[in-house]
Amino acid sequence: MVDTNRPDEPEGPDLLALLGSRLCHDLVNPIGAIGNGLELLEMAEDDGKEEMKLIRASLDAAMARIRFFRLAFGAGQDDAMLPARDVRDTLDAMYAETRTRVLWRDDADRPRAEVRLACLALNCIEVATPWGAKVEVIRNEAAWVCHVDAKRLRIDATLWESLGRGKLPQDLKGAEVQFGILARASRRLRRPVSVSADETHLSLIV
Image 1: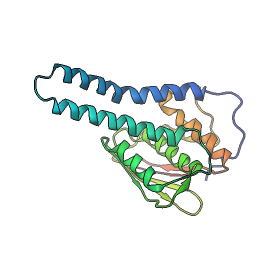
Image 2: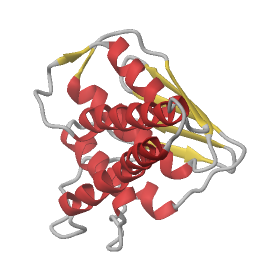
Image 3: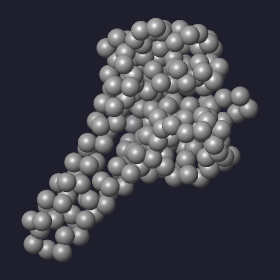
């Protein structure tokens, strides 16, 4: 188990700026696809059904991503209860067109602060699973447990160590900002993070 109960570092990457970059980057692709679909629709000589399917799929992807961002990064009362069904529906929609399958094995409504930890953990797992994976999310009496099975993983030890006593790299990318946010959130809630991984399996507990 990694002890994460320590004060935040006085200096480090600008997480707010990185978060802005991350949100913009992740929304560019689906919104751009919507624009492309509209252009094709304008040029179409038929009924435009295929173009409308493209627009609908891209819009659904963008909306799912926005809902997920609200869970992982949005402000709100920490003790506000979030229905398990809403969380599961959001994850199903967000990963529907990806090579990753997320199984949310929790049927209880949870406080926003709890759901935020789980979503940030999933966001960190995305960095390790660019080729897809099966991710199972379980809630035991004390913590979230995420089990990951993949044909191969991409593990950046420095990033994962930052969830414990390691420092965030100064060249942290926008696509990695969730590591800094999860580290701070887990320390604030006094929820130590434990991570173990090999070439095809990863386990994250928070």
